Length: 187
Image (cartoon, rainbow, N blue to C red; front, side):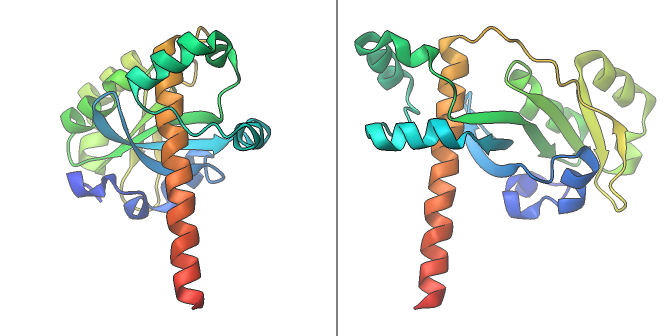
């Protein structure tokens, strides 16, 4: 759990999400802003249904998003099909977790899951507080050392929309993979 391979959604202990109060969020791995990130989100079912009825798939490419916005400027004003709670990085070092989560601050909360000996260091705690990172112990019981700052920018830009679309695409991909796995086991 404390290595780079811990990025996958199946490796993060449910106790970490419960400690944060995020146990009802969906976990997806999304490549947002050039890095793979573990993002916790919730699908906005009414907006998803509207998009499905209109035949609008996720627009997870910057050029395609610009084209769609040019053809339909109101697209950028529409509600997001996902509500992003935050991003989580389970790592062995504070430096690695911070590097993975640093750019994500304007999109949602950021939480580093670290070994106790790292998370409890005064320098790590001070920097986490200063930058608004949450800290959770990787070992059980998964204690929240520092809650994340959940105040994010309310002004949305096209980059916000792009990240939302990337996460929306990851949610739908994960749903279809789960449905395919379930169907394969039923056959």
